[in-house]
Image 1 (tube, rainbow, N blue to C red):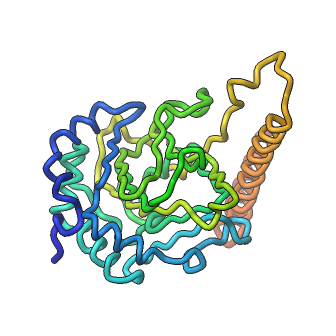
Image 2: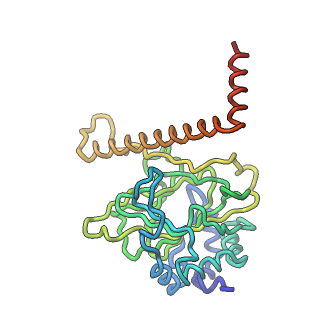
Image 3: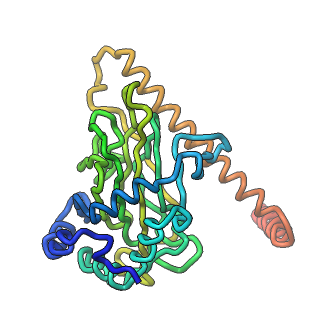
Length: 306
């Protein structure tokens, strides 16, 4: 069995107590940023074996090709990813992350649901959101995200910055911004206030052969404190607010108008998606024996009210 030291850089292991303090005191929610997280040769091996965009799932919810590609069957990506998978499920690794975060008895997700390799191209963004809070097929509480970035070239002016928000419904800007630099790791708790995302990638024309690459690992636990427990929900997205400079009396520029139109388009898309989801749920209720019973109960209820 591969050991923790074969994957995580030794200097990181030696900083465990300092990382624990950083995680516990971070705002707007608990997190820690760790540079040079993986052993250098291992990080290079992960990048060298990173799948091509076309190998992943790059079809959007609308059935059309998009600018994001993911691969969750990481063991099929070669020796480096097999080694990563071997190590992150060991008690040694899970307890190491647990000591930093103060979360005991972490559970590895063998299905990599939502995780694995992530690649995003020019024009992509990830709206501020909190994650689904229970594993889709198990009775596990989602507790931590661990993301390692694999981008040797990245300029903050290109966007794609990992953003942490206190409240995206009220804030026009994130409280923390993290550049997705090579071998930089971000570990953060997932709860009902861990709002995060990344702004639109806007690469210069000559750099659009590059993309934003990362490996995302999610960890769970069988229980969590009652004060942190909420009813099961899916990922909750929030659209961006109007920038602060768009104030009364300002003369709108072409860029301002384009930005407003983009915000409206995002809200329209979200409304269409919610309508489609609601329609599918209603149609599913109408099918089969259970749907017929539900119809009869509704019919009786309406008549009883009259």
